[in-house]
Image (cartoon, rainbow, N blue to C red; front, side):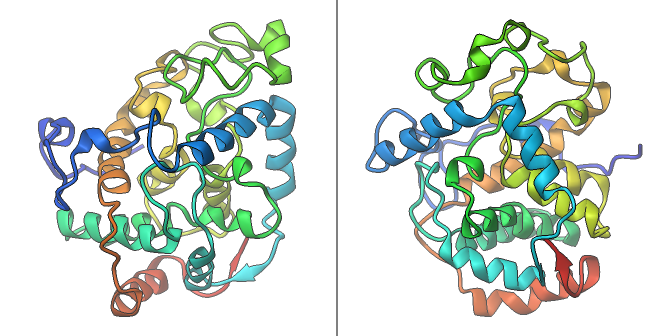
Length: 286
């Protein structure tokens, strides 16, 4: 598969600046030890890590695989995110629609020549509309992880939230490889169910005219134990390792553009509507 160049020196991709453009220290992002939102965050992950099992994930993949929920445009889905505040996020307490624009605008500034990448920023969390159709947030938001194999150390709250998960009692699911083969490729791994997998399914079902990198970034952008923690490399194929720099590049904007200085959707909508019309126009099956 041909992979588009990220467009900058790899050494620049991974070099950690001290502060983001909005002045916040990078070390203060993703603080899962303390903060005003920590009770909400911990309880969300506790429910997630208790209920996300192989059986549950297979059930949800089957339930939503046909994209029969409803039909609506991308912009209509984005407007629905005005009503979603991510209960797993320790950094922000405002609707996800603003985060979509923040991420997209960060990418637009850094990669002005890649309009499809701007759209990825807008689309990446759109699967969180599931939280408005009856799915609990623990089945929609938060970091993802493979089910069916041993939980690795970099999974958030790994040591305090999995004790009541039924899969922990199944020896088949508690070895390094579990139900998988070495380097089988992440596309063949059952990831915990949530907005990443759902939005990737929607994009495939509706044949979005975006490059493979776009589909990949959206599918694995919440897989922090892998792209940031460095775990689960034993399940990765060469293709996964080849695409990892794209996920890391996207993550800079997904994470570090979060701030209380909220963008104006009305000012930005015309530009992003033009991208929607180019790559995923009209009604979309969800």
